[in-house]
Length: 224
Ligand code: ADP
Ligand code: ADP
Image 1 (cartoon, protein in one colour):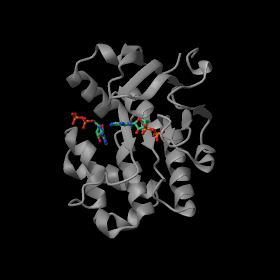
Image 2: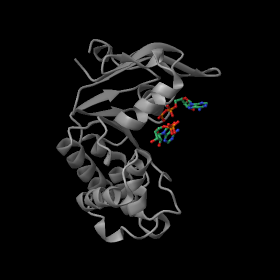
Image 3: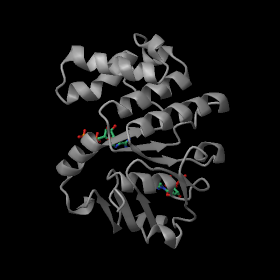
Image 4: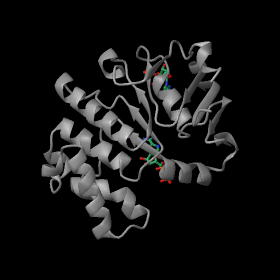
């Protein structure tokens, strides 16, 4: 049975139907690419599946629990404990060093500074950015910043990583490097990945593709 299932999701913004009957399922450790043209509803599907945006209708279940039935506080706690997020831009705290950024989720979980930074350093090493640990995000390249963001998203070992165009701001060489390290780290940690992209080259790192068109996915997604 899949870890995460979104069924027949509908979501409108005013007159715009961003999702018009979209479904998605992800198994533990599976890497799923959500593909489709710009404006087709990919990001909205990711935000709904992650419990960030409530759908107008449809159901989302994670590990046998209905997200719709949870309170905001419960959903927020679930996201913090079990999910990791990587977006296209600007997710690192500019005032903190790269090491402190990666240690932050652990610090928020009550891990002592020394231990948090030790574990954070291990993740920076794994993402091949150990050398920039003491620099601030504004002082590093886009590709390095994204690898720091991936380290931060994985440091508390989420069961699902949600990545929305994580290589969208990078050239193809850096994009490939981020994808290789992201998928390698996710596989080693048995973390499932929901990856939104419009690039086939990025989707090639996935186990399976879900195509979104005009807010809809194929019926096969529903049958999970
Ligand atoms: P994609 O990720 O495939 O580019 P999105 O999910 O971002 O697609 O958007 C799907 C549709 O919903 C688009 O027409 C977009 O303009 C609209 N949309 C998405 N988010 C919002 C929002 N917060 N407010 C208004 N319209 C939105
Ligand atoms: P809390 O209310 O407990 O602070 P959040 O709403 O910040 O929880 O969500 C928890 C996680 O989801 C955080 O890691 C945060 O980075 C991510 N997140 C939630 N919504 C967004 C968003 N719109 N953009 C970027 N990250 C988000």
